[in-house]
Image (cartoon, rainbow, N blue to C red; front, side, top):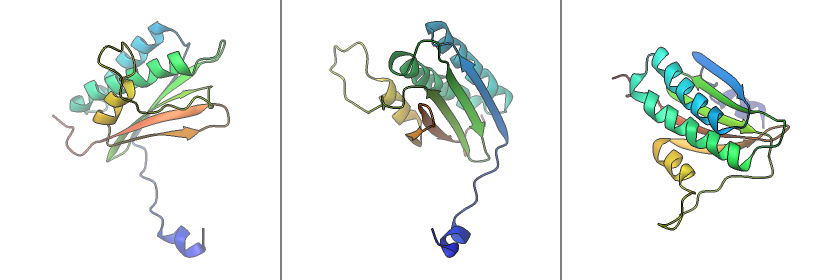
Amino acid sequence: MTAAQELSAPAPEPVLREDRVDYTPTARAVSLSRHRAARMVLQWGHPGMAGDAALVVSELATNALLHGAIRGRLFRAHLTLTEFVLRVAVSDPRGERLPCLRRPDNDDCYGRGLLIVAQLADRWGVEPRTVGKSVFAELSVRSSRR
């Protein structure tokens, strides 16, 4: 990147609120992360986003549990709020197992989590970590105060 490109790159939005919790990879942790996400978003003054945030963290945490868990290692739910974006990220230790959007058959019991996330989020993706990966979804804040 040149000096001119560095100067023209937009500065990241300042984080107004943040919550980060590590969970043991169990089914109970999915429920705990879902309830905590809803509670935090409500406390942060965005009741219209609480349900979507809870559903997104639940789907990402379920994927971390099913596809990213390693015995003895935790997964992390991380919420950040800026003026314009609520970012929900779930990190797990399995960086080699990347999520992919797929279309399940009508009779499949699983495989719809990322479809739900993609429908709710304005943007979603995967970021590598030193150990593992972080799957994130970003929801626009612009019209969430209801």
